[in-house]
Image 1: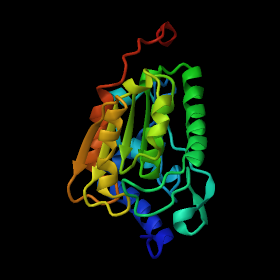
Image 2: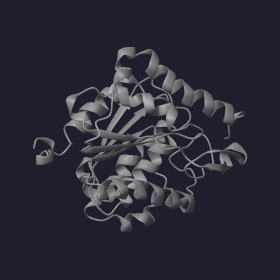
Image 3: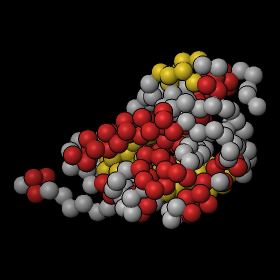
Image 4: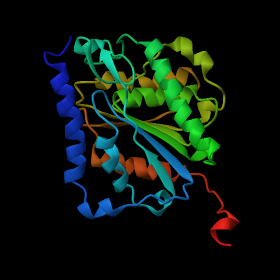
Length: 257
């Protein structure tokens, strides 16, 4: 069943996610600066109707020393007509046919694969610049989470990890044959609120069994009472999860000579 006012709903939900984060973390963290000698790359993919810049404050929450040599990227989705919002044009990585998203919702693989190509181009650019693929992390919320899953599994090499928040499986099992053995080794963290009414919990819960059939392991975390948003607890867990998976890169002699 479609929402009565889906465009307004998405705006409220996505803005609320950022406001929640900003109000519950110390303002002193905004002095965070990016180290130009980046050894890690974190790509954050926003949800439907949102923008990259609106999510940038997230990076200030990751204060562990391991994140100092990190380059963050918060791209914005192109404007596209969205079927579930009656064809309205808005920032959207790929088409979504219905809201709420369920485990059996229709999948638009054609537009999804175009978005995946764009994500892969961003990854390739950083790898070509010297970032170890094992230190490349893709994170995404809602539609961005679904794109994260597809992007890491269809990338030919193992990456540091893919983190999915309130996402779903946006492709059919027919794509599983395209996953390389290296891609299947990419660690996946999946977090989902049990009170989510936009991407139903059942849609997220269906992810791990789907991946297991393809030979892919997934760490799934359910958050009771959490709706369609990202909580501080989820972000703290993400920080710990990424820290343990960041490859150790020996500094270049040019940094000390």
